[in-house]
Length: 375
Image 1 (cartoon, rainbow, N blue to C red):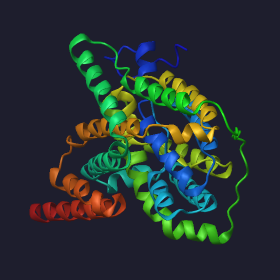
Image 2 (cartoon, rainbow, N blue to C red):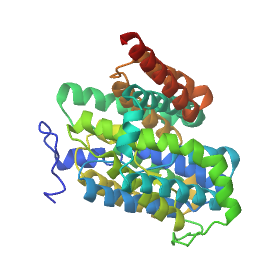
Image 3 (cartoon, rainbow, N blue to C red):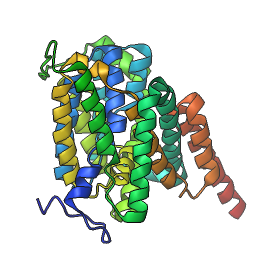
């Protein structure tokens, strides 16, 4: 266990309590997205959660810091909006995973990192924060205002306790526990039990074609920026440790391919998830192991459809806003506020993929003009 508790952050003393407090920090991103995908596509929610739990544990052991595991956001957004089949979701995960694996194996992330300016990566963080806030308010807090207010009060109380009394922030863990406790109390362990059993998923050529045309172009920019480059940059910010982007790209490739083929949802890393775990106290890999165990337990609970239907949506919204605030704190560290702001503003109406390309082109034009003026 001592090996798992090591970190390269010299000024942080990791405690068992803070690791446990931060282990559910990113659940406000993971759980709502997987719930919505399950409803829209008919995918087995328990099986998706089980694969997330497995990769949580593996990530904690491998990275020894809270490198997050979260669903592909672009794939999830399209799946929810278009009600695409689980086969097409699997195809998108396999294609994106294969590309990430190849990029990591051949060391291309260093080249991509040189092409994509830091301000663009910060812009992706800002855009994600704005999207999280909008999704939290519209999709979770307004439909369940009572529990949203209660969760918000819990967050605020623990914020003040941590600031003035140096008490560990257990707000995320308390909110998740309260939400599932409420659902179990309302629905109980009644009705059918749908056991999550991994099943081989092999998409056909048409499904691969649809995924390659409709989904992958939107997911790849987000994966390379937020899941790889922005995560690598945030690891440096928070832990004073250089994490090779190619390493992150390879683990994303392996996770995505494996999960997709065996009935889960394609998974990646993410700056938002890292910010969330850190925000609630996680500093080492042990927090990810705790999180994996809890996710496995949630997977069992969610094998009962009645419990899933009774879950209060407001808890997810407040956790998403907490994540967004942490992302904004790091996004404002940009070295070009104009480029970062463009991406953040455009992300809401047009999505992250278009916002990313607009910011990238803007950054390139600015760089070209600066070099031209010097010559």
